[in-house]
Image (cartoon, rainbow, N blue to C red):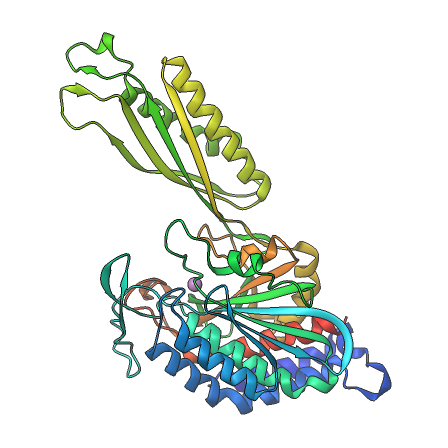
Length: 442
Ligand code: NI
């Protein structure tokens, strides 16, 4: 709460200084500077409600594709605001459409809704005691990645923007997405399914914005990176097929274990020798090695699996090709074969450079220039990337760490002690609303 007032002043002061802010809309409608000021006022007025939603959602987390209570809450609030509401999108997703009083473009704002299979250990008065089953196992359920805050903040932004409806030149689409953390293996869900079901059409979305609360960034800060902000994530597996033999007679075998070992070593040169690391980081990790059942039997085959992370689609393609070439080439040299399969999972969270440059003044006006920080890439993945594959998008991290906290002591995302300082929420609401308003006002 103590962060609200200074940033409110910053929003007013800085908004007045931007070129966009100086331009007044024709016909007596409020210009961007006036809209920024109203966003700040409305966000302050709605702050207690956003915190209340957040606590309610936090206490009642639901696993991916099971977010029925969450969806009902969202749909009820959007209907109350007079939005056109669609439910059951990508199973449990909700989409709200706010048509502004003037014609214009279509901008989408996205929040993810799902919790994680973890038993909460934060000690918060509104901590979750929810239970469910995950892949057949009984589990606790917890909002351990802050998606509760995302839903609450986007509802807050919907509340703010619905009150600015008359002045909005265009349409805002609010996308509440299930299952960001992934669906049951082998099924499509989350952002990918929403896109397949046409969430970016009717009306056609011109640009999309999203944010993620970030446990180790201080409250009040916005973090971004142009181009690849978060990595693509693909799974690969390599089955080396050789010929089994008695361990005492290796010359009768085509040893898949030795071949797999050579492949593992050679895969290390893909990132170190075949990727331009001055441009972007990349990762190839072999996480499993499976072969054989007994110490003196050379098995007929060996299987490796691992993960590939890249920060641009070009690097991603280059790594895919290099893995195939390396595995099959080494296997062939040893008289074995290698069956390589690469399963694309999440693309690069790629912030469109032109859109990022265009919206940077909005971020600065909202958080204060000194609080908008360009960061290094994160090699984790985020399925917001699936929207950015189709339309220009910008994804931003929102600081969620209480002031005075040592980042080294912060409980990370996806752990039972994960916490968010609620002082983060007002800036999130204002950022989402301001991105939409400024994009449409162009
Ligand atoms: Ni998350």
